[in-house]
Image (cartoon, rainbow, N blue to C red; front, side):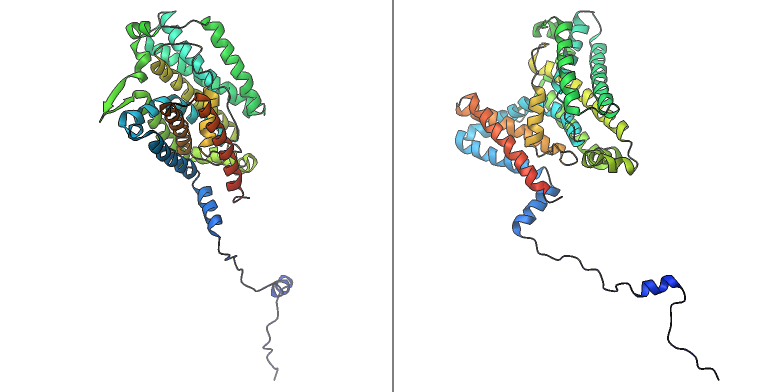
Length: 360
């Protein structure tokens, strides 16, 4: 009678190798985070929290320094009026910065489109509605030019937009002959150009339609960036363009749409600036590019791309508005405002670097 062999042996060669592999269960680091690490992780997951905290603190500080008149509905609504244009242009800048780019031409596009709207109406007698559409289309074209040069020719966004900033601004001066269209003429013959400057009163606060345009625009972009595939692609390109491309994202197409949308938003800002200032002038809004970058940086956006929130940009714009308005009410020299804003910019970048170590 043959004895049955009870010891099981691997039937195939690869099973012998597997039998020698490690059998220990994987374990994860259960290191308890320190309070500082918890704070840094929270700030990393909520990029808009830092500017929101700074905004609340600045409101409290000026409420103590200036007094109760700082917290009147009229005063607070005036801050919103002052930051409406910066907030709209900052929304365009936010889209570009999320892709790890920067757009120095946003202010020039805003001025050029506003001049086109005014000149087409008064120089050629074009219906104001059509003139506005021409300005919006030109804004999209300017953004498309930026996008093609960056996406297809692989030129650095800083260099491209530095060049187009000069080109668009020079085109504005040459075409307009540095001519200003007076507010009285616009009010009489083309009141639609001043639409975003119209005011309504709510509970003692005065708002312009430009403020509502800014808030609606930011709400729409917040939803698009956080709840659509296109928004996720924008973040992915800013975080790692090569990885995004390998995962199926059409990076060139997305980049062009970003710059075209930025151009359209700048055209909206150009229209809103006519309402804000009353007149059409090539001299107004030239430094909107710097102001938008300031709002973006103070708002916690990473200039390395892939991280940030458009709500943070809004808070950043409001911080600048609160400091500008509060210092003016306190009676200090305007240069002190610039000094404080400069310090805030440097602190914002330093905080961003500190927070980014979490991801590293």
